[in-house]
Amino acid sequence: MKKVDSKNLSFNYTQTDMRYVAEYKNGKWDEGRMTDDPYIRMNECACVLQYAQTCFEGLKAYETADGRIVCFRPDLNAERMVSSCKRMNMPEFPKDKFVQAVKDVVKANKDFVPEYSSGGALYVRPFMYGKDPIINVVSANEFEFRIFTLPVGSYFKKALSLCVSDYDRAAPHGTGNIKAGLNYAMSLYPTMEAKKAGFNENLYLDPASRKYVEETGGTNVMFVTNDGKVVTPKSDSILPSITKRSIIQIAREELGIEVEERPVEIKEISNFKECFLCGTAAVISPVRMVTDHGKEITFDTSDNEMGPVTRKLYNTLTGMQKGTVKAPEGWVVEICKA
Image (cartoon, rainbow, N blue to C red; front, top):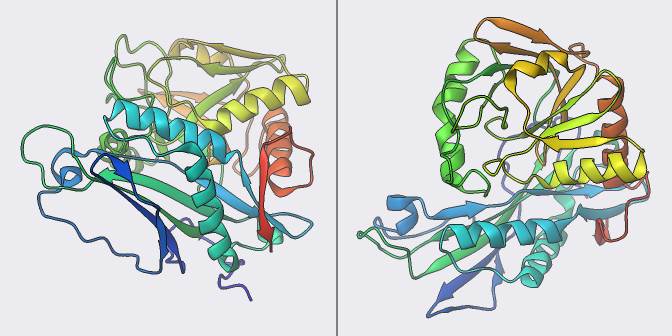
């Protein structure tokens, strides 16, 4: 029996039954365990509270058309979390244990996976943080790795309007290319300002020259040229989105669409026909307009429709995730029967 109302899904926290917890002490991880307790107890001086030593991941589990529950490329989330941990001076959580923990948590909460017909998913949030009391500006010695889940619907409900931000989301040679909580904290105030001005999100430029497009506060951005080529910004401070990497491979190998990964100047985006955001939460979300300090740049997208190339990519990606389109070997990991 499903424990989720698949017809009324949002993108908000909903407590599910079980979560995974592993602790790192004396230089090693314990065996890890499942628990029904959603609360965390820690010292007021815990490193994560004082110096934001934390990183996280995000992936989804889906019910397929033929009644299975699957995850999409969890091995890449495990690899990216290793990269984040290295940069944040945190202990790596073993990749095989990461994937197994994801499987265990999803299986334990399978009744919260929205029905296939709803278009929803079970969002899976692995995260790690420094737990012991630290007042000197040094790394923690004890860490906790956890995974919780929540049923979700669409992150964005319709085509988006963005504004070019005067703020930076990351510093040159900083942490923009890892999934650290501090990167997202940097975007909270600018996002509030953008929404007050009537926009859905900010579009950030590179922090060094402020000439090149990077990403939004929580997603990568991609463009489509008039002749149907996909163009994605390239920069050392852009998060390597698993969704974007999948789209690039799908475009090139499955759909025969040419893809360019290169620096994209803000002044050239008016030449593109389509624009979309991509990420685990956003999936593929069309952009109808970017406003650059009063200059409006529009794309081939209505409020409720994607451009033709964006639509083709969306249908193929979500078809793979939901089991109606054959995915490359190893991309879809079966967890259990629905």
